[in-house]
Length: 469
Image (tube, rainbow, N blue to C red; front, side):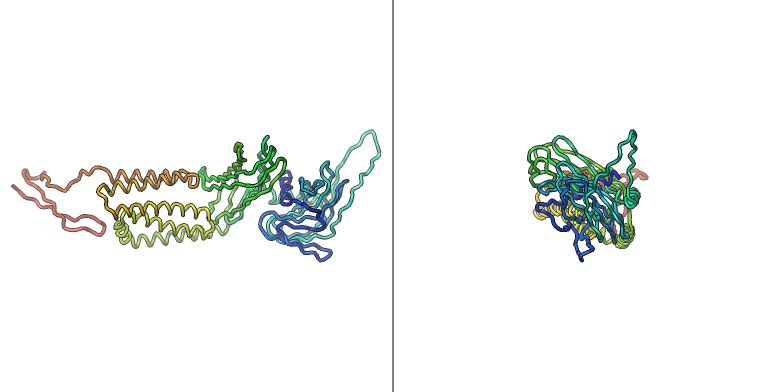
């Protein structure tokens, strides 16, 4: 139940500037036939249906009947407002149901607070779905005077409907929501997101930021995602708005998980930096579970790789001969074209961020390829093919390293290692020479090596002739 209380901040999606005299919605379409109110959500995430505001000078009891169709979870809470009808906070979060459920009678109590002058009922719909509301009433709760006795035992009883709701709450998937907190003398930040996702799901993080000192005009929010200890994704966005002292601002970020997302545990690190102040950090973990779409994609990918491997094997001689005929510049351009094809496939699978990363690598490959093409066209006297090839690979590693905030440092290290291997193979001293050699079997004899041809693989065919002096 404690985790559910975190959902009370969802009501902060709205701020009332004027008196509210009718039902309002945030992310829902409202239809009213005079007796029953129908609210249908129109988007993913948390959507709210808000009742009219009622003055709260004493305890109020909100009573209503509600049923749902195809919902991911429906909750109810009480929102409180000050004398200017500005939202203050929300309390009494109650889980109602999930999926399609029949009519339920629900009662929620709104207790007066010092600064609260008005209250409203808020129905929260998680994701898509429709709810029907009927028999909505708001009534005052009069205190019951109890006779004074020497010993009084207080027993709290709850209506049957409320007992059923609380029992269902503990096993419902709404427990999937997690809350992260940063709270110091400068700022308070509360972040809400789910614990588990599946490939293709929309990942949404809601930020509730309260500045405690002065005025801040910019807060930078950065997210880093690690998988198996390796940074696989990063996102950074500055929030330009006025964060005045004591005011809570709600912002959110949504991103769709690509269908190619590998299952497993991911570590998320949030960095919150108010301009001119120190960075605040908080981290958590989420779990990505496989689904049918992911399994089908892996099957398709495996079959595609097998098909490509078969074609490469079948036409290996032709491909090898063609590639060997490329100059250094043409080879870099060739890999850039391959990268463009890969980026297009990744983009089609919904991984836009990764497609952008591949496109950056393609740009680097094209840049280095064109530079080599110019050198090969001008044919300067100082040019040495083997040295230029190694330098080109090291240049690619350097560009990748300078972009390590996007790619992480690992690709740069791998390319640097590749350049080192190529350098060892290309620049080692040549000790093998085609020359006359002494025949070890005949004293004074000599051998002559005559090159007579070359195979398609590049091997030299030669004959050895012996001659005696």
